[in-house]
Length: 234
Image (tube, rainbow, N blue to C red):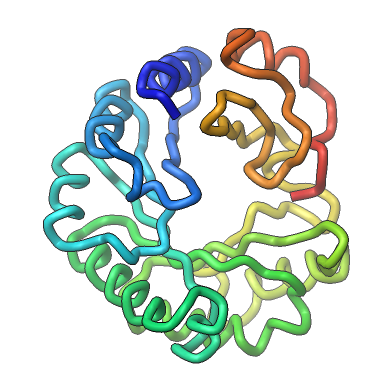
């Protein structure tokens, strides 16, 4: 995303009362000038969050981000151990992700692990092990991203995720964007996603843009989407 577009997006979002800015990807640590943009957002009064795979998060880079005003980090984990995670993200990636969680937590950042859930019920045993791993690494919580669509688990999966977030040992630690099996933060208008091109959707995983910041102001785009459902569930 060009810097000018990124700053304009932040300014418009802040003017609407949005309080949290999440730097998302792809991989945001590849973005040139990320520290500069984090500082801009923090200076506007945003709570700033980084969503990363952790592979490029060195102590020096984390210190620079903290000095810029970063408040929270979310590190992707794809399994409860090295074998499952590396099978998805590549050899050696688990060790880098685990090190990133430890580093962020030890630095005083609010730190979460983040995992995409394809079927809440069938993945429940692995997710419980992942919660235990996250605690051992020092994470403050786990964020479950429900996946729907043609291969997703649908309502049954979402009920499974909701059950996990309320189950023994997970309540208050594991969270998701779901409020019910048929409602999420996007459907309640609690998320705004802006792509690198300036396209605006209610969710990073929605296929249907509501408009573009290159053509309209954010306020006008959101007003036009009021009361309308997101393009896909999550």
